[in-house]
Structure formats: C-alpha cells, structure tokens
Length: 498
Ligand code: NAP
Image (tube, rainbow, N blue to C red; front, side, top):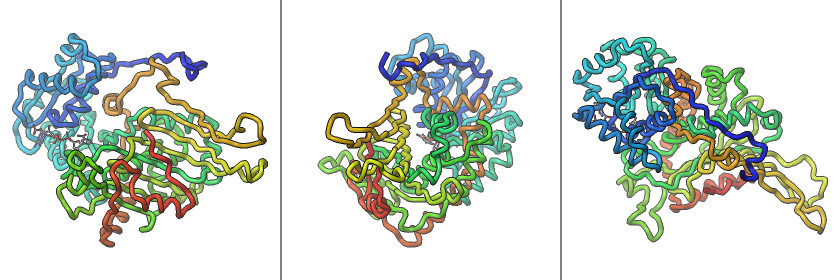
C-alpha cells in the first residue's frame, strides 16, 4: 500500500449487468467503430456487463458476411483493444454475439434484412450513427420507414453536431421528425471521462469547495486541452472546422459548464443539463482582442515527418486555426467579474487536459511583504495522470524566519485508488449509459444550439476582419500573443505539463 492509499477503503469494482440489448452500429466498418466502439464493447463484455443475449450488429455498405465482419472486429480488438492479448475463449464468445448487415443509408439495400433482425426482440434497441452527419437524416428517415423508430428505440449521434447554429438547428429538427429528445444521445466523449464526472463529485460531494466557488474567492479559471499530435490524416476535415468548432464549442464548453454551473437539485439528466444550459446562456460575447488564433509551424529539424499546419492540410493560404485561446466571462451572480480563460491546440508541448481554479490572495498578509503573495490553486487533471492537486501555502521548513512556500497536496487517482479501480474508457461508459437509458452525460439539443449561438459571432467576427492565425512553434504552448493576452491581465497561463 502506498502512503496515498492509507485510510482509503479498498476499491472493489462492482459491475452491474445491463439489460439485454441490440446495438446496431451504422458505420460499423469505420475508423471510430474499429478504434473505440468495438474494442470498448469487448472490454464491457470481458467485465461481465454485457448479457449473453445482447447482439451487436455492424452495418455499412461494404459487402461482408458475418464471418468477414467478425474477422474485422477481432483485428480491431487486437489493434486497438487493451495491451494484453484477450483470452481466446472470451473473444470467441464475444464474436458470437456480433453480426453484420450490408446496408446503404441512402438506398434500399439491407433495410429489409435489418428489419427482420430487429423484429419484436423485446430488448433495448440502440442505433449508433457512427457515420458522416450528412447521413443522419437518411438513417433516421429509413429507421422510421422500416418500422424501427418506435418510441423505445435510442439513437446515438456523433460530433460534429452542426458547424454553426443554423446547421445544428436543421440537424435537430431533422432528428426531431422521427425521434423525441429523450431518444437522442448526442455523444461528447469528454463527458464520459472518469475525471470529468469526478469534477461533479468533487464540487457537489464536498462541503469544502462550494463556499469558495464564486467570484468573491476565485481570481480566474483556466481550461487547457493541449494535444501533441498535428492534424494527421484528418487535414481535409479539420481545415473546414478548426480548433474553435472542433474543440471549444463542444469539449471545452462542456468542461466550462461543469466547473461553473449551479448545483443541480438531483443528479439526473435534465436537472444537470438545465444547469449547464444556464451557464452557456449567461456567457458574455467574446471581444475581438480576447481571442487569439494560431497555426503550428513545421517541427524544427524534422519538417519531413512533422510538416506545418498549412502543409498538412495542403492549403498554403489556409486561415483555419490549429490553436485558440480566449477569455470569456459569465454574467451571473456567482461569476460576475471572474475571467475564464480557454485554450486548446495541436502540436503543443505536451498532451494535457487540465482545469485550474486560481483563488484570490488573502486579503491581508500578516507575514509582511517579504513573505510574498500566495494563492491557492486547485488543478483538476483530466489526462494524463488523472487527479487533483491543491496548492497550499506553508512555512518553508528550517530556521531563518517566516518564509512561505507553496506545496501541492497531490492526489493522483491511480495512486490513491490503487489497482482495484477499474479503468473504463469514455466510449464504453457512454454506450452502457445509452443502454441504461441515462442521458446525463449526453448533450441536449438546446445545449448544442446555445453553444453555437455563442460560438458563431466569434467566428463571424474573425472572418469579417480577415483575421489570419499567427504561426507558433511546434512543441510550444501556442502563440506568443496568447501569453500576451494573459500578461495584459496581470496573469499567466499554467505551464502545459504532461
Ligand atoms: P469513417 O472511418 O469514414 O467511417 C464512415 C463509416 O460510414 C464507414 O463504416 C462507412 O462504411 C460508412 N458509410 C459511409 N457511407 C455510407 C452509406 N451510404 N450507408 C451506410 N454506411 C455508410 O468515419 P469515422 O472516423 O468512423 O467517423 C464516423 C463519425 O464519427 C463521423 O461523424 C465523425 O465525425 C465522428 N467521429 C469520429 C471520430 C474518430 O476518432 N474517428 C471521433 C469523433 C467523432 P462503408 O464505406 O462500408 O459504407
């Protein structure tokens, strides 16, 4: 037992089997299905969460039979599953629950066969739209036409959920023609991360933080989601989107909501989502000088392997940002006057997602000016090394008077909770929530629209100004003017540390 574990009860994972279900994965041959959905389902199977009567039905245009699809699934699990080779018997049993239908979202091929498979099973029916959003409407319409959109069916839709308010509204309206809001599960996989949920546990399960969680005691809040990878093979898609649409409108916005929202009366889907929506609606518009954008340069000495953003997307004049930093405020009683700084980018110095709550200085230092000014800083690390650190001011040990230093009270969850704590990937948790019918960790349609309503004017602003993102060094913490934006406010970004 490590020193961190002392006094912490031994962790025992309790896995509760979900109800029998049939999950159809449209786009079952695609990248997301192979990398995340199928390996995740296999892990849930191994954990004993999937009943023996559950079926997973891959659906895409590629001409495959069940055996061919099972081979593809086995390869996906081998490549993207856990680092340990899965036990042969487990894999065989899992694959026995997997089948395939060749189907065209835009034609008639395959629909009669799928209807036959799904007829009167009496199980939970879920349809995962792991395809381009351009096909969402086609799938929804055909599910209804072929009698599969009954009121108990659930659909899971992937981001991007629109590229602006208008397209998000259209998409919502299209889905609403065939499914009620309680049947639609819009995935933002950030919400499925263990630490993101822990954010709610820390805020609303402890008395310690809530009294201080407001503009009176908090100086500012920083949210950073830094990636070391570039756009890779997603260049064409990414260049039409950029960091604002790809990351801020959804992932960072969700983190902002969870950190800033009022305590919901209950931990239930609409109570939580109502509170998040209030935060988004209270966000101030972002002023032009409170947003900076950047594009990464080629890696010094390694430009062949790591080209610049513009080279990677094949457009020497691209104005799309691979980095963005902005400052916003929430106009409500709790947060009025407290800045929220958001930052995300590719090819940054480390892969790190962190929320930092920087508290104000004490109103008066009894130790005099030489003791220095100190602030408590609460850091919530979402990845890697999920955990929480609270910076506390103490006396520097030893003789020589009252000198103060800041030390971290560190709780890295993997150390504190030990080996027994089960690691569940965001996708597998969220898919199991779909089967359970729990929408708490999924975005509601009005939330998505409110987020676009805030995002659109910022994007229109820089488009109207003809703003061109500034270059930044690969492996840095973004553009120098993002540092400048902080310095103007007398603050600094936290170092992006792995
Ligand atoms: P992908 O690799 O291009 O896969 C697309 C899938 O759709 C394939 O299985 C394809 O199979 C199928 N498909 C295409 N046209 C079809 C049609 N007319 N009828 C039926 N099936 C059709 O895309 P992906 O990366 O898996 O992404 C899927 C969705 O998830 C997208 O909305 C994406 O934005 C979102 N997403 C992906 C990731 C990721 O990490 N990949 C992350 C977040 C969100 P056939 O060619 O065999 O038909």
